[in-house]
Length: 405
Ligand code: AMP
Image (tube, rainbow, N blue to C red; front, side, top):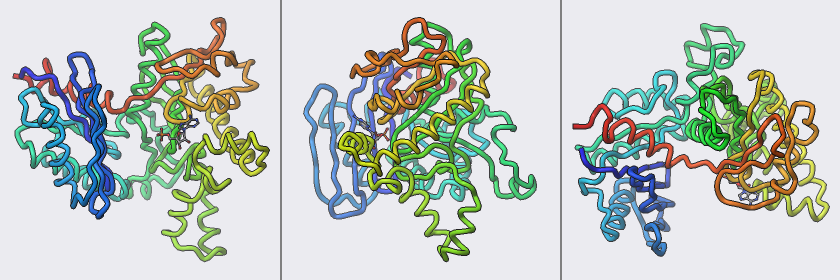
């Protein structure tokens, strides 16, 4: 095997995001997005590295047509999917259950297991499967690698992964804490160790992935020991549109007293709660702007968001015992200085301090925002899930991997 290119696909129910990378130097060659697949108003946006974005509007019937349209765009840039340079396609798969603890080359049994997990990931796994099947049909000779959002969290001990539920019932329905955003938590915890100039095995990190979806994790020596999302991505932090933690009895109460159905409550908790439920906006930029204007509702939403975040930081400090670094990542974590400042305010006794000047600087790349003498390093570490998927895919099937010839 001589090639070094990996195509990364992130397939949603009506979208297809992609990046083509050259793993000899981790360079991005092209990236893009197909949106509204199956509608009349589909749109493809394709950007070759260093080039102009090209947009294509008009109906794209299904994922097969979408991938063929992407392949045609890549062809125009001399990066065609039939090139011998392409060694594998890496797929983001949201739920890998307990079986998939590592990136895995897809075969029929792997596809069957991802399908078996649909009841615990009804929104995501069907779309991820469609992406894999489509890519497999286009390049049946090429290794397709599934990289699971849950895999990094499979190292959690049973004490963190189990709910305190009747064991037989929980096991019969595979009810346990799986965690998500694992690719990001893996990448950011390693990048944080690198920023500190230390090996991942020597560093304990609390990773705060704060995007529209949000999760925290406690990583001891490179292995996840706890994370805030659970059976589904609903548990844990306050998110853009999800409630995060609540008393489970709220659900029976809404069923019995509010006369809501399970589906209505599902929609309420996943789509109409969190920041958007509290103040009508889920974009932290807008919330910060409203707070500046004296908006009380936006202030309260922010305070609830921060209170929950601080509770998890404290909890994971206790779980880890010794914390070397706290890393902020994703849209809010990378960009919203007031969130970072408020979440860590008043934690001096724990050795946690933020330098106001460093926190306010807008910059690309991983950086420290704590004063040099602080016992706990506080870092902003941009996540790169596509690069992580490509890296894991290439490590498995690229040069030197088990499938190389
Ligand atoms: P993600 O899911 O990681 O793409 O994050 C998306 C979220 O990041 C948006 O909904 C915003 O709330 C937030 N965000 C993006 N840019 C900024 C910014 N400059 N300041 C504050 N929040 C931001």
